[in-house]
Image (cartoon, rainbow, N blue to C red; front, side, top):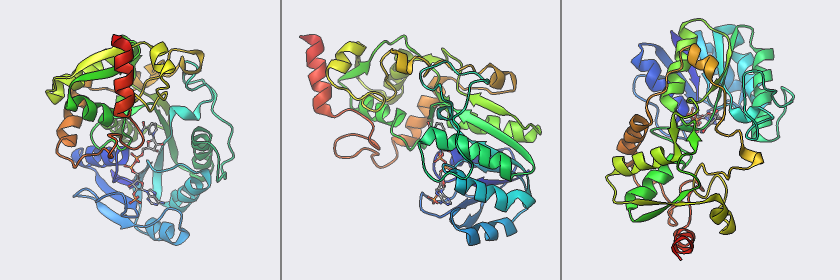
Length: 332
Ligand SMILES: NC(=O)c1ccc[n+]([C@@H]2O[C@H](COP(=O)([O-])OP(=O)(O)OC[C@H]3O[C@@H](n4cnc5c(N)ncnc54)[C@H](OP(=O)(O)O)[C@@H]3O)[C@@H](O)[C@H]2O)c1
């Protein structure tokens, strides 16, 4: 297939590029050239998706069998892209998010769960609502096949969020590592490469459908995941598990402080409880967590440090003095 990826140089889009090239597809990427170099083997069209003239120039470089939009956040901008490409592509795969559903993260999501209401020409709002508006914009503007994929929490090589990468970086330093909540808590992490593989599979097989994308509930647990990070980094780290109550008393920021930790309360009861059975029946295949951790560390350990001077990555992670304070509280 001839595939156009809107984005393609950072994390998930980059995974789409890699998987598509490996599968023998012809890949064009469209980006501004700011987030990093394009991968060898692609045709790169430079431009800004917010600029109508750049979109017209992009459209003239088609046609394509499919557009994959990994960089859409604002309905008006996504609608403009879908309209510009409407005459030159058969299918449009929009990467949305579980955050586009009103019930996330409090409730268990299934394919019938309601999305936020957001106009297709909106220019501002919250991330999740805007993603729902982007979907409406694509459905309105694009006459061909529309595929909407809603990923949950994505990890893997080239992650640009500081979630698994912070844990790997902290654990590699060794010593007593504060670990959050319950080691048996089930997670539904998904590898960017598995999302890309499934997206391409859907395009190759001519589908036009919507899928919730995460690994199966119980694919891994917090304990297994972090212990795998210890193993793969070859660290002498010892995980010291702190109950939710202790973390809250010590004002550890939920979600970002110890990345991906939320207390087990009503507000986040559904965060790791998404029904992904439809995607699995349609061919979603999630690699074992050990493979994701190993490949991520193989990439990350050769990168210049991703962490800032406080040891945090993109605002994720716990300051060392807070970690020491909580560890001391646990042992006293
Ligand atoms: N991370 C998660 O856990 C998670 C969970 C659920 C859903 N998602 C979704 O997954 C996607 C992740 O995206 P990614 O960042 O990894 O994708 P990516 O395609 O690898 O990177 C973003 C790309 O967009 C380009 N770009 C940004 N602004 C642009 C503009 N105005 N015009 C043209 N190109 C532009 C960037 O290049 P330049 O800067 O060089 O232009 C870069 O190539 C997002 O849609 C996100 O909502 C993520």
